Amino acid sequence: MKAMVLCSSPRRDGNSTTMANAVADGLLEAGHEVETVHVDDVLSALLRDCRQCRMPDGECAIDDGFRRAFFGSYLPADGFVAASPIYWYGVSAQLKAFFDRMFCYVAASHPQSASVVAQMTGKRIGLVLSSEETYPTVSSSPQHQFQEFSRYTRSTFVGVVHGHGNARTDICRDPSDPIGRARVFGRNFFSAHTSDYQIDTPRSGRVWA
Ligand SMILES: Cc1cc2nc3c(=O)[nH]c(=O)nc-3n(C[C@H](O)[C@H](O)[C@H](O)COP(=O)(O)O)c2cc1C
Image: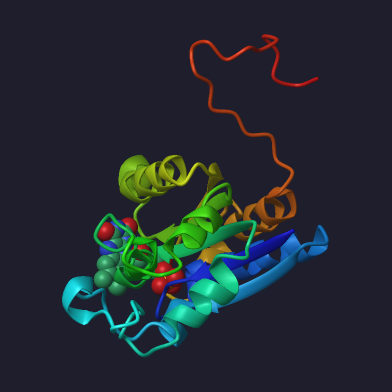
């Protein structure tokens, strides 16, 4: 399978990227193809008003690396893992902007929107978070955002790895071993059992065969 690991902290040697690298290692160990993209490398502007900004041929007028990352890495991937520090109880502005910028290509006014929409569905989705605080709900908002995004895109929300640290490399000292958990998460990303039942979903009453 093809996976994209999307790093969104401005700190390349920071905590969330360290965990994201461990996810990538796990994915590779399981024999998957991995592409790691740093949002800062590809995105230089926020979403604008598409109606004003769009080129006459319907293309996005913002000339940066987003289009290449979106069409070349995100859309072809069978799944992606987004890594972010917790900033003000949400994801980083970089990660939010990466998802906002998709709008230009999803909107019906883009010539390839039907194919884009089709390629945005059915992915496996994971989240890697680092925060200074250990309060249990500190990551509620990002988790909820990606849960809703998964639902909206008919995708499967596989899970979250949350580690705690503040200074660079602090994450290595987290006794809950988020780096080890991230590696296992990557290894099992495409094979992990997932379920999201409706009341009338036929089921055996057991989770494990
Ligand atoms: C702008 C900013 C906002 C932050 N907001 C929070 C917060 O709301 N809660 C928290 O626990 N940590 C917060 N932090 C701390 C980071 O989440 C923490 O240092 C994290 O490990 C950084 O990850 P990184 O090394 O991948 O950038 C904030 C840090 C910054 C720079």
